[in-house]
Amino acid sequence: MTQATLPSTTQLVLIPSYDTGPKVYETVAAARRVWAPVWVVVDGSGDGTAAGLQAMAERDPGLRVWVLPTNQGKGAAVLHGLRLAQAAGFSHALTMDADGQHPADLIPAFMRASRERPHAMILGRPVFDASAPLLRVRGRRVSNAWTNLETLGAGVADSLYGFRVYPVADLVDVMSRQRWMRRFDFDTEAVVRLAWRGVKPINLDAPVKYLSAEEGGVSHFRYGRDNLLLTWMHTRLMFGFVFRLPLLSWRRWRRRPPFQR
Image (cartoon, rainbow, N blue to C red; front, side, top):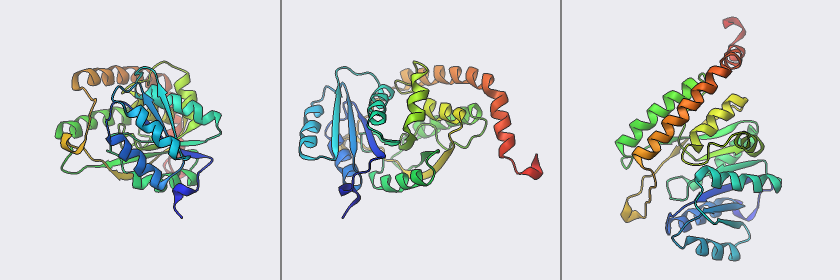
């Protein structure tokens, strides 16, 4: 008997999807092999996959699909799913991309870590192979450095890798309090604001694949547009960091062993 035949009532897999093509079917099937329930939020896709996913859900009680009428951004799609999950009584959600980059076989391990530390966020720490574009690898180091500063060294190993387990109520509350985090800025801003809230990051290694076009890989990342978005995001977060610096400093002091205080 596999985990997929034993639906969880507290933890679900949440997959936002936008124009990923047939690869989304493989991603969803891989997630369903190891977990239930799996929810997909189709973010206004125009590639025809919404109908295909709905057909899969009709045959599979462990899969549910919601279709947004227009593209609203990754963060908005995740928030839509989180609000539904909260209303249904789920306490934690593992987010993963629909494009095949994330390791579905590690879902049970991440969920187990979340059960052991329910007040923490379980973050994937990417393990790159030769397929990783050097520019992307170097670029995320900049974002990670800013995140480390903005959280005063809270321990976030990677700010951009979206394979994670979040406490649903905390993240919904954080996102509902401001209008950002709705697009590509979601992954980084989520961990920073949750860390400010006192949600501890737990980092687990997870491989990441960069699929070629021949392998069905699709990327919506645009270097100019999305780097500008990240720059604006870190600017906002730095203002928030300065405002919260006394509290963050006190928390860091409290984490030190008594003999070092």
